[in-house]
Image (cartoon, rainbow, N blue to C red):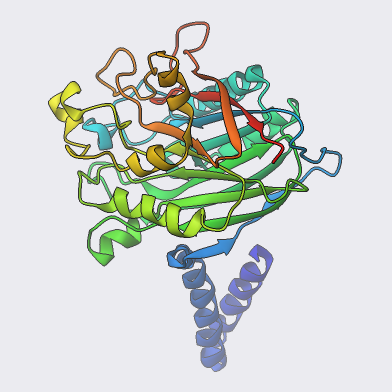
Length: 371
C-alpha cells in the first residue's frame, strides 16, 4: 500500500510539471485523497455489531483439553504508561508518556506476566502506535516477551482507534489505538469482536471516543470454549450505558455458548460495595443503586464469590491516582455453570513495591466438569 501511494505521488508530481497534463494531475490527486480518506475513516466500521478479527497461531502450540486446569491472568495495564503521572482524564494535566518510560513499563509488565506461568492472559488497554505512548506497538513488544513463556497464540481487537483526537486543548491526544488482547498457550480457532453500546453523547463525540467491545476468542478443539475479554465504559456516571453493555453481553455475546469465561475491567463496583465507601470524587463515577454487574453475579459463577463463600475478604483491584493503595474492586471474572474457579487472588505490586498500572492483575485457575 505504501508503495502504491508513493507511485501515485510521483506520477502526480510529474504530471504537474507538464501543463498539458493538468487533468491527469487532478485525477491522481483525487486517487491519493480517496485512499487516505478511506484509511482515515476505517475506524467507523467498528460501529458494526460483530466481525471476525485476526488471530496469530503457533503451529507448534498444543491444542487445549479440558482434562487439566487452566491458569488465567486478567489485567488492565493502563496502556503501558505507568502511574507516575497524573493523567488528564483523572483530573491531572499529563497526556503522553516518554518513549523510554513506556518501553520500561511494558517490559516490566511482560516479565511480571511471565512470572505467573499463566496459560491464558487477557489484557485491556494495550496501545498500538498511539501518539500518547510514543507510537510504540505494545502488542508486538508483549508478544516478543511472552513468547518465551509459551504464550505464542493471540488475538487482538481495537476499541479506540481514531486518526486524530483534538483534546485536551493544551496537548492533543492525536492518533489513538487501544486494544483488547488475549494471549494463549493453546491454539486458537477463531476470534470475534462484538460491539457494545456507546456512551450517551453526540454523534460527533462518538466518532472520537472509545467504542467499547468484547473480544470473543475460541480455543481450538475445546468444544467451543470461549475466552471473552472486555472493558466496559468509564465515566458513564450512572447514565445507563453500563447496564446496556452488560445486557448486550448477556443477550448477544453469551447466548448459545455452552462453555465460557467472561473477564476484564467492568468499571463497576462489586454488588457488595457501595460508592459511599469511596471519596466523593471517586463515588461520582458509580451509580448509587444496584451495580451494573449484579445480574452476572446473580446468574453465573463469579471469581470473587468463591472467596466470599469461604469468608475471605475480596481484595481491591483499582487504585485511583490520589490513593496510596487500591480501594475498590471493578475488575471481575465469570464463567458458565460447567466451570469452577479456584486459587482466586489479586496479585500484589512488583517485588520492589511498584505499581505498574492503576489496576492490579486478577489471577485464578479454572477447572472443567466432565458433564
